[in-house]
Length: 181
Length: 118
Image (tube, rainbow over all chains, first blue to last red):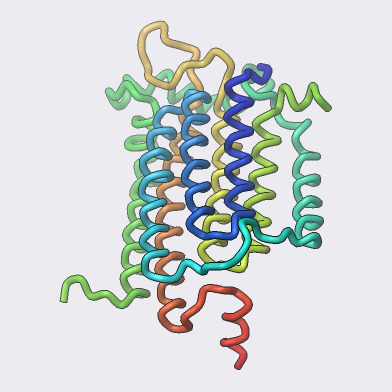
């Protein structure tokens, strides 16, 4: 599948937002660039036929995450410094550039975007085929993502709940807030 | 090179997002911006998974008669879990940042290092 105009525009938009988050000096401006980035990437999820991930990203990534960051900024400090952009450090750019070049060297061995059949074992593999064939008969849920999340991989979701609980306990412990006192 | 970009465009975006996230983690002096960089790095990995699950002409995995072909639901589930875990991670990191600020009165990495070694 070749790059369509809307996907190209979205990818350029998220990359610009990410670069903006990196180089803007003001923390709040950087945070707003990150929120726009999350919104753009949630539209990319919908373009890639992943509406569940898009909804979660828009609600949790762009919504709750931004609120958490704003709360943190309200409780700490927003340094007032001169200049719109941070200065770029050349040694770090060289280091990160080398990392990106090494990573891009692996791209030709990956399947093309949208490939199926033998070229892309993820979409045509046995596991995917089993879920799609049996999800409705086994769980009576029409949404394949929900069936895998809640039934086939229910223990993963239980583990996720444990992580969220521990994170809540850890955050309250660190902040020394005794909500039940 | 242009042909590769045209057929593997999302993977180039993944690698560039990883690079931008890594740059922020290394270079940003402000701790809050480091956490933003960590989130951009994470989203790059999410894009890699969701792109692998995609097939051209596929539909979202809502199973119905004659609705196929579907994209793979499994990477979507893994990434749903990872998004929620990422938010938990951000929440703990920001709680630590608030605590650091109440103890030291700054979020600047260099100043924190100085205060720590003095």
